Image (cartoon, rainbow, N blue to C red):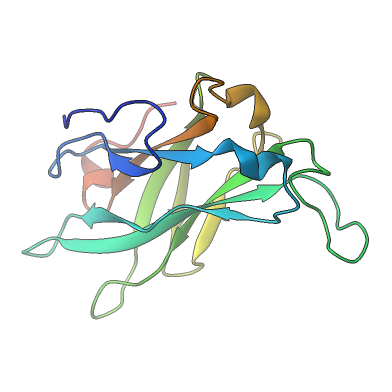
Length: 170
């Protein structure tokens, strides 16, 4: 596995080796967003290896965080009105050349909370996918590291032909 960056370093960091079956990422985000009128936080793009063709495809993804709650007033729901509670979505930015299915299994973890059950999704059918209710919502404020004023979203991904070999366990 790759060396883990120091806590508080903003951005998406790959925590696993590039050829690992389970691809692990950590997005460290600025916690000030959780007290703002922002309606969505978006990670920088990162590459997920899609085993299968030679050479394997590398597909761009982002993580979206959306605040909890129904739209309120002119600006809609924000992280401030949701008190820092939100849902996570994995968003695919591109499809493999030549089209075809893009099967992925993934799971999220926020801060030191345990990982939620994995979700399997074909991103060629729909570009975004989150966790099903009731596992969808996270208390993001509880995950804030006060020393760095950041919160960390962890993502484990198994993609393409690797799913047939060994999917993520619960």
